[in-house]
Length: 459
Image (cartoon, rainbow, N blue to C red; front, top):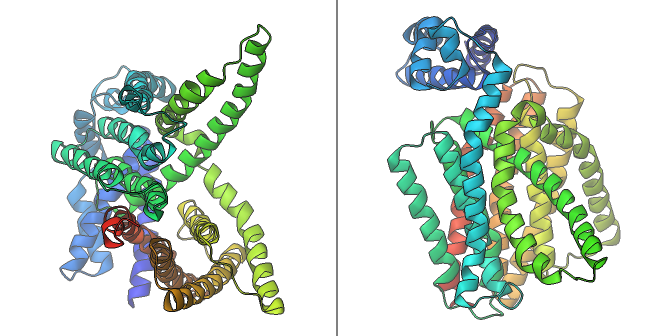
């Protein structure tokens, strides 16, 4: 068989195995996914030593043994899960009560982490820093107020190994150095770059806590991508709720002659905002069955709309021969636009059946990526021209690097998607490419936050 046929055959066998496992009443979905991760890792090891795909799959399944035996092993390791009682005792409650127990178990840690985040954002006030007058300090440190506490919650929930816990502490400490040690002037471009890139770098540290049980597994990385999308949805919902709450607070207190502006600015917004970061993460973990399809649905809704907008932009810029204005705000806007395109691709991938044949939506995705690539090339040409003519700045260098990274990702994604539409490549290759590319984004975010300030003399 050809490599493509081998991969397609493997995915078919994995799909059949997954269907069988998911129908076992003693295994929850997360447990089935964990089993599949181990099976895939075993298959990869066997393929690496020269076995054929069908032989590797058969040997890997034999190694894993019977599901009942595995269930007992998992039950001993995860003592608080429902299927422990299902396998080891005759006394059972039911999945709903088990889920409720899990939420109650998580409640105290998430409350402590949310309170810790809220307290963290008030600590600088003890040293005379004010959120109104020291906005640049809070902007640089925003990710450090909330994300370490979210990482603590996720690491606790996954019982992260001590070595990983210390690695998380070290990375957040490195982030604190990047945010506060460099002597940056108030008008320094590096302040804005740090405020944008450091939270991105720290979010990947949160991802390390999230996949702590199996850092190298592609499926766990895809789970983190799903977690990120669902977290964004919950943060948006919490933000909408907060936006409705603030006028209500002003209204009821104004009725008794009190204007709570100081309370809202100095307490409600900062403390509530950072606490929401932790709470949103907990909600994603607790309500996966409710929200897990929201991000992919939004991706399917906006893919044709964004594709139409980008196509219209390209037609307009060609018709008018207008140049692109690359001021700082425009650079950020174009990078956000390309990131949105990548997000639409990622969340469509995350919910797609890898064995389903290509259809109209994949062709729409291909159109979207082609438009994004064309815009990325135009932006790169403009950035390169400006750097050649006027010299480089931190903003231009960061934008150049980000666009090159996005260009590489989108180019290879377009190739894989085109081959999939032509039925020459299995869909799993596109998924593995995206999950394998995540460390590139993390590395670049750390480079901008840590290396750029001294590299450009703290400009």
